[in-house]
Image (cartoon, rainbow over all chains, first blue to last red):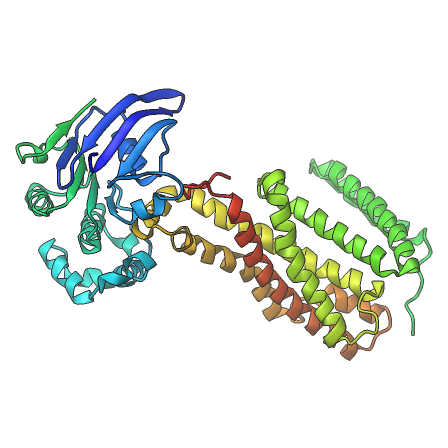
Length: 205
Length: 257
């Protein structure tokens, strides 16, 4: 049994059949690029993994566990989801980070603010970002914070949904290289050429 | 020192002033006449009916009759909340009714027993009007709070999902909107508690003074009722959200209201 499995998925969205008899298997530590054309449900597919979208038919399993109402929370806690709009919680950056690591499932991580400061530097964010309100940041800045948050959460599966939008080429390259260097199971949703020739398995439908 | 009885026909004298209102409205084309007349008419009929009804209830003054009337009030308030907030009666009526019925019931019986010290805590004279005041306030608070909670979640679905992804726990993920709901519910009552007596004399106090009570007596009652309203509104909104949310999400924590 593969690490991640979509079996015989059927999904309707707005009366439109997006997936029908869809199958996909992904091995552990595999890095996959979903590059299907727009409107084919790439984001829906990754949201199915998190239980935000529930297929009309078919089965999804993560690390040998079938996704159901009972298992969805334990499955979510293995996945780090960075979305294109980076909806990080509202508030002052420092407090937002502290709060996320106070969530029950993240408490074991032993988060230190100093580590966040190092990451701000790596991601070319000024140190005073810490004091700023999330609302006052630019889309690109929020994006990078969400990526840092994802790295710090240290979960086994990463979903990166259009995370390069709004970043310049240098930063983009740096970020993608960094993220792909991690030994995680990584699912990327993107149309960006930046992922080409980096050894990702391309999946389209 | 009782209140001066009003003969049944003298309230009609007020119509003398309604006439110029109607004329001004017609002259200036202000389309309020129909609604004004209808409201006055309806208010009169409604209150007369309630008056007859209450007369009988006060006559019996029986624990079960009084409690049945209180339950009826709770039910009506519950129905009004469910409708105003766009919830489904089948799933959410009972949680709402229990959610704010219980704290208000506990509060009224506590007041009657320990604060006022009545021999009969189900005495219609205290039980029904005071409960009416508590429920009326809890009702408006509940509507604000429940609306804030669910519409906040609905409008910020992506943010909510992101929090779910971070925490994998529905309670933690919804907490920002839960807090917002409690604050929205409590803000108006805190503001009116702060300014009571300065801006206007509260209705119950006015009524008691008209009824012949000494102002100090009326004020002590007012202090009690203001405190009770604030407290039961607070617990009412917590319980109402906690109970309604059980059926507001599916097994995947998605809002299904």
